Length: 382
Figure 1 (cartoon, one colour):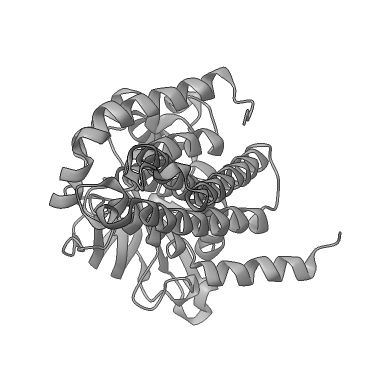
Figure 2 (cartoon, rainbow, N blue to C red):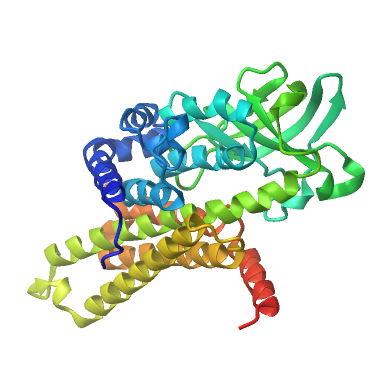
């Protein structure tokens, strides 16, 4: 389908596809097997200017929006979802700064992020706070000139690799979620350390670590927005970021579909390529339908956000849920098309199958997001 991308967006999409096929594809199995953070690929993406596609030109970006970010994530995910989420998580750690940072904060951090000299991370999840973002326990106690940060963040993508970390902590525990605030914490700050790198089912080359804060001083000028706004900023951030996760899931599903079609043309059974069997044809057709529908939803939601819509919680959740469910469904069916060899590591579908599951879990479990969608429906006037 023609989604009427701009000339710049087509260039971004084509450039990312070239990098993915020429630089990521040859090493994706090794990165996955070694669970190695793709530092060299991050540098290649940085040199290509792709870390700044959604950032304003005044900070060294290309002046695009969420759709531009989604295009990069989609094309990377088509080849390796682990590389894609390492890239995308920097955007997750940057969007709150972009939207609510002061001019001084933006001037300090955004040029380095846009150039890829520094990557970012977002620290929200804790042992008591997953889909229930209001369950955080980390504290930021006001002190002279700033705050003392204590607590542990769990399952943080780019943890230990990111130089800039947006962290949510309670500045007033008595107010619960309304007492949360957002802070920029630099890697290397005294009292800021990291847990071990988690060993995961999928997206293995991405770094997932704990962020550990023990009497870590954060200067007042590193607070994002007003005190007590942290929970609201987080909810707004996730509305902006979920189409990007949808792009990750949809790009992954596209890659699985292409692999299944290629294999079905080559694999001969009963004297013919299995593509000739109607049962296989229908599986592939359903996969193609779901992938295209997911792409339409993700692109439309991204365009809605870039167009200045005020409220898009429902649409953002819908695009994430549908795309991630599609990724799981398509990779499962693609493995069925591959048959026994699809279960073997030497074929790409085994990795894609493992990578797909997380998209239904992080940035809001799909069951929780379905409740959000239903809540929005109850209030909607048709």
